[in-house]
Length: 420
Image 1 (cartoon, rainbow, N blue to C red):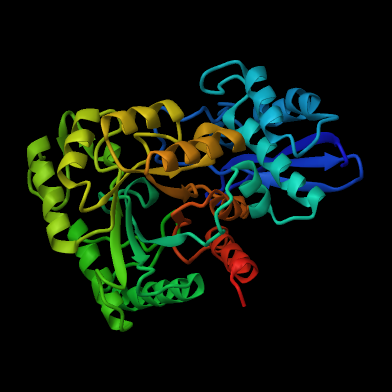
Image 2: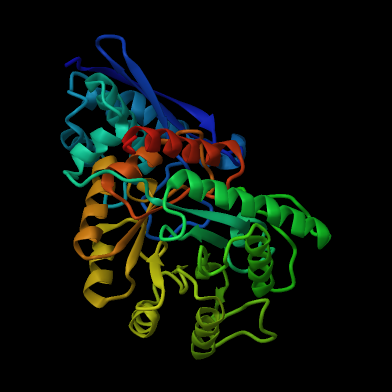
């Protein structure tokens, strides 16, 4: 097995044109693999720290030169001579070198870029697909499957200039009606293109948000759901049956001074009124899932809502949990939700992301492996989701190259793991 010769990092741009980190892991036999990390816009307060330079003269303060330097010096020195298959050992050494609870010294973006590149190099050096290597790291002995894809086809919130309150309006193919991934993808692409025709008819702008979904200027959030339902029906699929609706509320963005402020209501909503509003959405649209329906530290509201509606809807913690094992355990113990959104850059290493998935699965939580709004063309999370046995994957809309790269990678994996 060739050893790691060095790590070599540089600054590149993400899908929003902001700097991010790319890292190459170079082996002593000359083999090398690169990995790059994404960045979020709607970020939870409790996420691991994304290290930026804060120099206003350089990319408006968003450059990542310090994170790059930390890889090229500290992390490369640690990795040099190591076995790329020793993911746990190397990740632990990186975390120890950082020495903080939130990776604020070296940067979660630096540590994750190094960690991802090592995982990719380990798969290459063993001549196995990355998803199989991830399955080995996760001790996943179950038959591998393609997670159900979810598609954010209308963008709102911080992903689209607050044109709508809810951050994501999502369609999800029901595997009971559309069993195979390639058919699920085709069905939801058809809905996406039909929605474009409907928005054209409605004289709506056809620009897209950060995650590739349309960003219409509609009067209410509910109207977006109605138009999506029209698009589903127009392509001869059954809305709320073959195609489910889901929401990422990102409630942090419209929770102000103890009230929820929505286009759909003339006055700010108290917590009780907002509960009623969410209950009406469940009654009207039978959604598959609600992501971040409450602000990130309103544990009592999460617990109450899960107790009342957890048997009707999957309640996903993103800003609440931030792929953090301590916050996940609190949610498990208090029954604050029943699913977790897993974003490796929220926690900062491959090993920690895998462990959070295993912790959630052991508790019976649904697992959703997710991209970020500021993405790169790196398709690591597609292999990661398959390797850990995730229930769902969330890559955005079937639009924009950095999103399509992930959907296309799942097509390739499907052809490899599906019996002929």
